[in-house]
Amino acid sequence: EIVLTQSPGTLSLSPGERATLSCRASQSVSSSYLAWYQQKPGQAPRLLIYDASSRATGIPDRFSGSGSGTDFTLTISRLEPEDFAVYYCQQYSTSPWTFGQGTKVEIK
Amino acid sequence: QLQLQESGPGLVKPSETLSLTCTVSGGSISSSSYYWGWIRQPPGKRLEWIGNIYYSGSTYYNPSLKSRVTISVDTSKNQFSLRLSSVTAADTAVYYCARWGGDYGDYGFHYWGQGTLVTVSS
Image (cartoon, rainbow over all chains, first blue to last red; front, side, top):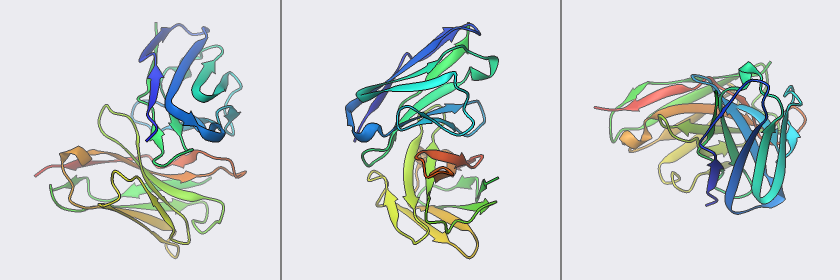
């Protein structure tokens, strides 16, 4: 099973700042089959990025994904008030599909 | 707009079977482009993939749950279902149903139900 470890656990930033979230895999994620989701309290996750760097339909271009192999990054270029949430990465290259433990982006 | 809605008991006794149904509206579950999945999230913990089903009935399960899980599809009702047997308190979680695959064949869980909390307790 591929274990995904996200860092940091919590990111305290102000609106307008840049957020950089990391997702590290215990083994290589083939074909960059990695997704990022945003989850707000009491809501279902929302897909942001798939295939490591492709934005899902309707996702603002301030969200970008990068990486390959075992190291992946989600970047939010300028935080908007609605971006404060928990972010999860997910790999779908190897069964079982697995999720990271999440990074909380909170208002500083 | 595609919508998914989970339904089923919110309280299940230990050792019994958890049963949930996901009703899909605004689109056909019989499309060859998508898989339909179940994901759960124990309180305060990470998301856990349970398994997927294709409209034809082909299933893919998380090995850690495979001995206890059955996912089935009813295309006539545009629904798919989850059964998890021999539940314990560790199965307490919010259960989500979701569609794997976007409108353009892209990967990812693009559409999600709102989630339903299932508590395992006597």
